[in-house]
Image (tube, rainbow, N blue to C red; front, side, top):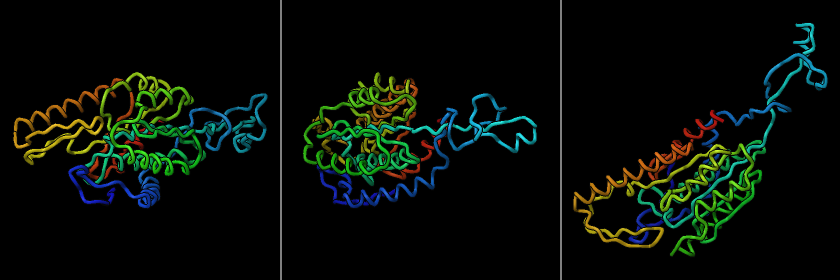
Length: 310
């Protein structure tokens, strides 16, 4: 899915600028329609009880609801039988969203923050179907937000716009809420058996490992990692100033050096491999999205797999 460039690139902002609020709302409609087309099926409870989907037909037992008698089977067998349905259960999804300064980086078609907002909208569309509820926790920003689980997506777009406005006003440093803080909060309030979706570039310390493992022990967990091509390969463009989006630290390098570019690519590959190993060991789902290409198609494929496993 393409997001149009909204501003000319500058040394301080090498990629596209922030997505206008009007385009964000338009994206909500577009993502919703495309997700409905890309994904088939729905979450199904493994519990038995009152519901609309047939689980089994069994002989009548004292105490069964007579309204559940299946008269066709009863007439065919000569013995009363009742229908037992899958229980309708509200699925609570928690979206844990990274709004730290490094998410504003982007050198391709869009910024990492734009992809994160798109993912939030896509998850929001799926998480609020059939009365299911969505909660939101942001971390790393200037004014982090916590929205309790609710049906519908009315608060999601407002929270995204508000978080963006606060972060644009304060770009010097991270907020006080870390990913570990956000996950610990979710672990403390989320009922067992829900879905936790962590959306982040996973830059910085990996202090999120223990709370993420705790979440994986109680819920389905999907980690959506967002990367930019320039985080994996250093271009040959001569002298270049690299800026750490989290700390503001600057490093001047000569990208004409082939050895430097090779060391950079090797270090990036090792970092990716280490992260994949860590997430696999924790037993969580993991999908990598890029600021270039069709991120929505990649996300839909992973969500389809997760839905079949639910």
